Length: 476
Image 1 (cartoon, rainbow, N blue to C red):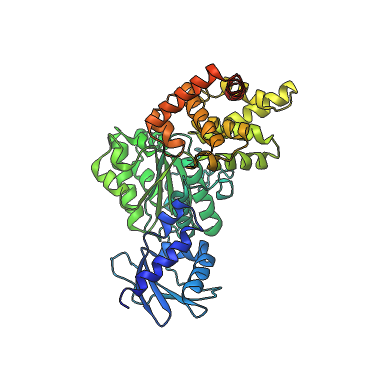
Image 2 (cartoon, rainbow, N blue to C red):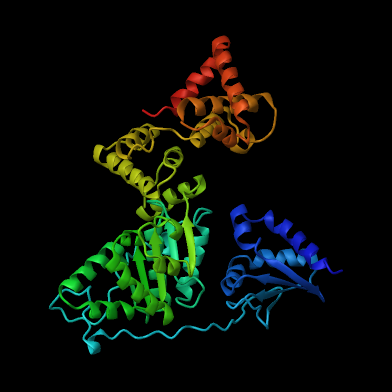
């Protein structure tokens, strides 16, 4: 009976795994440890208060059904939360199913009011001559959580950002550093955090500033001999959001002044949100004492969106703009531009503009022309995903069937054709092509290409297939 709680939780995990995405499972369920099972109460250990709150907010229905299935109607779930000092909470939260509302006591940090007027501190965001004591947040209202499409590529960063917004300065995510390549949504997410904080905590002073603007303001302060005012102004902000901190690299004086501002804000329980194109360990030209502080909280990455996320982003953009596009155009855009959300949205805008100016209907041909013309070389090489989609559509197969292990003749032939075009039209390695086609090895890809070439020479009907598919794939 000693291991009953482990066996029970493993049974629960088997059910949960079938009902959530792999990324969600790894993020929110793998870290959980079963502690004990007593009197139909399963106690599980979760890593943090935020972790507990996230499970309660997003997975309570699934947990309820799973516990009910494994333990019966009287089943209960109890959380043991690891506190910051690595001690388990002495009074675990107990959830009795069915659960509805629970009150959890939350300790909010005391915030220092911003009173620039009484201290006669110069506000670097105020035009000289204008007397104004409030601080404009510099946030873009369009960059809200409502307009931020969630997917496996950004789920951890978004959920951490939302936790920070609900409890600024009161989570372990301080600072919260969001990093990723160009055009993946770092600026959008940082603005969304600030907007949500303003909505939930209207009395807090939130300020968004790019690292470049911060540097220019500091240079002006040095020139005008009012560095102390500059430092004091930033030390009185409740939530400071600095975009693109990698541009502090090599600027020793700017890093030094930011180090002192960072220390003061962190020690007084204020929230710091940073964005960067690289994780802290890869940032060059930064002082070690500053890098070590960047690692105090959470570094969350934004990855390139998968196909479903790219389609969802386009659909969200269309909804916000009040427009409609043919489904094949949306899919073509999503398959063609795979690494940059900004270029994906830019291509959409270009297509709409061209259609409106030239009074042309938005068709797949127009989309192909516009992508090659307006998007910086992103569509010159077609993606393996798009090749597979065209082949699947042509033979009326599902993508799952194409990537499956079935040996049905029509599926094998479609799979070989997809491999053939992937080798012809992309720069992907044979191993990469095989991985995209259901985990095949490079030898299988070579065999597929050889088979297709032989059939083109000997089978007129098959040659017709290849010519038709090539026309559908080709970018004009």
